[in-house]
Length: 293
Image (cartoon, rainbow, N blue to C red):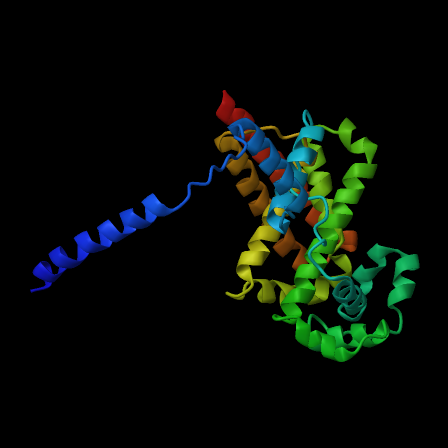
């Protein structure tokens, strides 16, 4: 039924449409022909005027320009480890660090000029209380502590970033490091970094326990990887094969074992720790030379 109805209706419609086309007055329309090349050039210029790159594209552009400008120089892991912290958060965390340590005999390592800044501070450890005290010290509402998802973990991570930034500054300023052989350079940089933890040594086991928590271990691993990579970078390492991973794994182990040894060291000025560190670095470089034979 539907097919027979369609056969009767469609021819009539087609005849009527043809009748209208034949009676309509033709109108000539001429349009300029645009060459494809001209069209693509105009479209490109229009897109360039209207397009606003997002943050990802901007970062790609800046990274490519910086890589081209730094061509010929060895790449660096990071230039500003603390860049991801907001300004107000950084102020609070920086002030909070003064409320973390307790001031034992080992605190004299930081020098009397810096020790004076700590006098009168209460030891609160790596805790929310230290962060609240830091917020009050800089005139910020203690409620800002709620903006840190992992509270005391943020304080430890900020300290790690701050120490890495200070180490980078030391590497950039100390020209005498270039005069040392690689093994001595590595040992010296590890010692400089661990000396930054001396004022917090009695509270550092708490920091290690915070870093070892499942929610924090990924960030802790990343920060330590950045640290050992920066040290190898300063030591002049240019390996691109499996040695790149081996060197960083070995140095990470040396750093961690020396860090643990430091917690139980009661010698003056951590002398036993630095002797332990020098011995481990010497053994690692000796093993490398033996493997190459």
